[in-house]
Image (cartoon, rainbow, N blue to C red; front, side, top):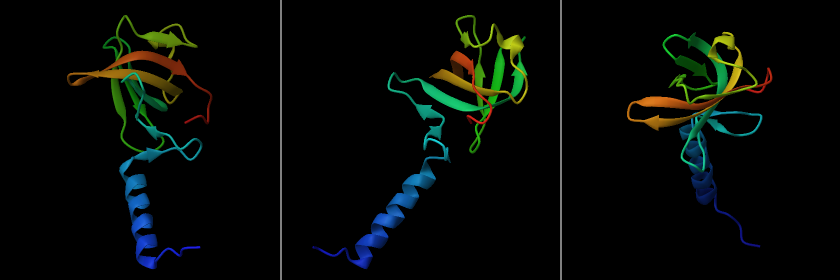
Length: 118
């Protein structure tokens, strides 16, 4: 059996640590970083709704680690487990799927998730 040299081992270790550090917020529960890129090009973020401005159509989500994400709610935004943005409570756990268009994050769907899911 071939032995791994200490130099190679340290190289692998440092590379892994850099990769993990570059991903931002990593959920210990499922090892998913948020915001996370989906296969269809959309983004997903799970966190708590820290700011809800219904009239302006603005929702700010704070994942457990990392920066908050601000999304624009439109008439095309789909609400799952709730009727509308007006029903979202501050600090409620949410899962938001959105697309980046220009300088804005446009919400595709907003879903209430179970407490402790994010």
